[in-house]
Image 1 (cartoon, one colour):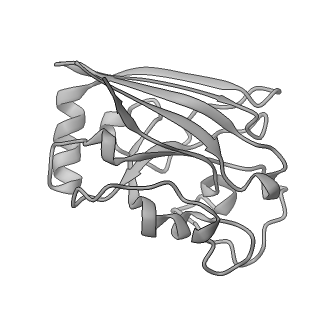
Image 2: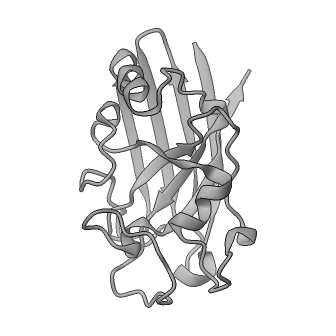
Image 3: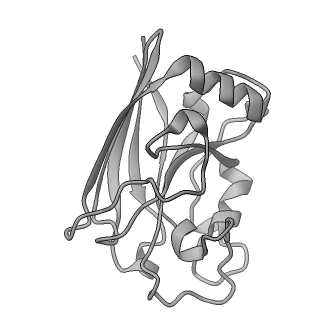
Length: 185
């Protein structure tokens, strides 16, 4: 059994007017990956995409900071995170092992901005899909970071904010919190 955790800290808090934060726990057994994520102070009453990001070549990912705001618009958008965090890898939705990132099956925060997500993922299926997409079955969770995304559609964002994924716009993909995934002894 391998255990990992992440303290999830706010990102873009000044823009979204709330400091989203929480924690995540991952337990990998011989047959499954158990995932638990609890978030507080997220934008209320909306769906929040959540994933782990990383580099397919095994390079260690780091969380984005204000240093990643390369266009200096005051917002760290999804494309700006990629230099230090890599690409979106596994979604924490209703079927992580299918690795279908753009969908409407992510947690929805309550009126207080809280949500708790818990799922057991079949490890063999997840590793097979990970191999198909990234060329390796090794999830290397201790080299990944977690991102929580999503702000209300009526939030005014600078025109420079990027991050359209299929039919989903920057409001859906804007990172609001992030955390470094670390192995636990």
